[in-house]
Picture 1 (cartoon, one colour):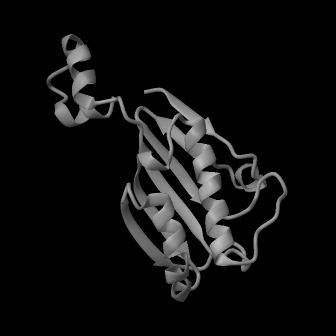
Picture 2 (tube, rainbow, N blue to C red; picture 1 turned 45 degrees about the horizontal axis):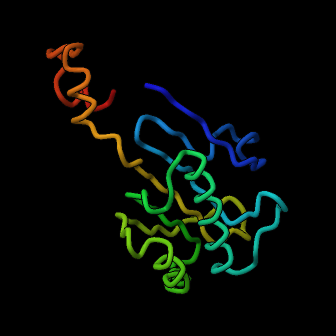
Picture 3 (cartoon, one colour; picture 1 turned 120 degrees about the vertical axis):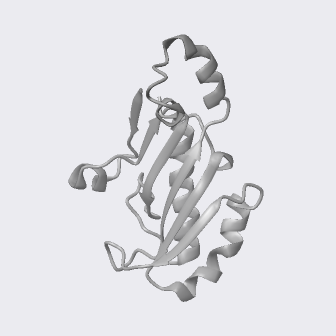
Length: 153
């Protein structure tokens, strides 16, 4: 299966050894993303501003993968202080209100004390259906592998 790595230009990616996002088939996996503005290196002070910038960063990675926030099917929010979570609900509702992806919120320390939120998403591009791919490839399928294995290719 073809794989595409997407970089945001964040110094963390090179220092730690990861990609902002991975595209594999119809799936887009976006790494945990914080609110740094990658063009200026600035991290806004408030959780609301950090959340807005984080969603811009995620949107940028998704756009490079040919997707958008509307394609998000799973989101994980990580906050050092769970009491701040309700403060960002209006921002999240604006970003995901119509999509309503499956979601989890966790409280955990982040890499730097000034970071107030990290968001990780999984998206799936429209137009790539497993059944269509199955029909196209059925002459090449090794039926001893089973349907689950074929879904992954």
